[in-house]
Image (cartoon, rainbow, N blue to C red; front, side, top):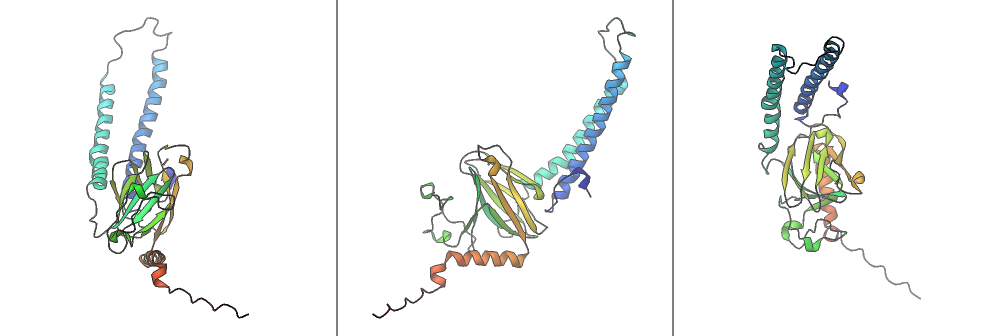
Length: 262
Ligand code: CUA
C-alpha cells in the first residue's frame, strides 16, 4: 500500500504503525515545502527593489503568518503525542515476558554480529572475556552447565514467525547499530549496556541485519542475516544445532578396522 514511498517490505506486526507515521510526517513536510516555496516566490515579487526603494525595518505583520506558525506547531504536537510517543513507549516499555518470547543475545563487534541462544534450558551460559578467542567470539564458558546447550552463530539469526522476539543487544567494542529494516527496528548497540529490543516477525523470509552506525573501516561488511521460519522449520533448525553440539555423545566412535595381515 505504501510502496510509492519506496519503503522496504514490512515483516513485523508494528511495521504498519511506523510506516503510517512516516507517511504523516512526509505529508506535513511536503505541505510545508510547497507552502514555503510559494511564499518565497511571493516575497521575491512583493518586496522587489523597484516597488520598495527604501527598506522597511519594522517588517511585515499579519495574522496569517502567526496562524500558520501555530497550526504547524499543533500538527507537530499531534504527531509527537499521538503517534511518536505511544509507538516509542510500546518499544521500550511493553516488553514481552521471557517465558513467552524467543530470547536471544546479540553482541556486535568489529565487524560481525554474534548471536547466542540460551538452548532448551532457557538459561544463557556464563561468558567471560578471558575465554574470548577466534573460535569463541562470545567467550562462552562451556564448562558452565547452563552453557552446554547454548547455540551460537555468527551473522545469522533464525527466528520463528508470529512469536515475540526479545533481543538483548550488546557490543564488545564500539557503538554499532542493529538495523532490521523489514522489521522496522533500529537500535544502537552500546558497549557496557544490554539493551532490550523486541518485535513480532510476521512474514517468512530472509532479511538483512545491517550495521547502521559507522563503526570503523569494515563497517560496510558488518552484515548479517535474519531468517524468519515457520515454527516447524525453526524447531528443526534448532534441533539440528543442538545435535551438532553433542556429536561425541550422539554417535558412537566408528570401530577401527583390524590392521591388514602381512
Ligand atoms: Cu558496526 Cu558499523
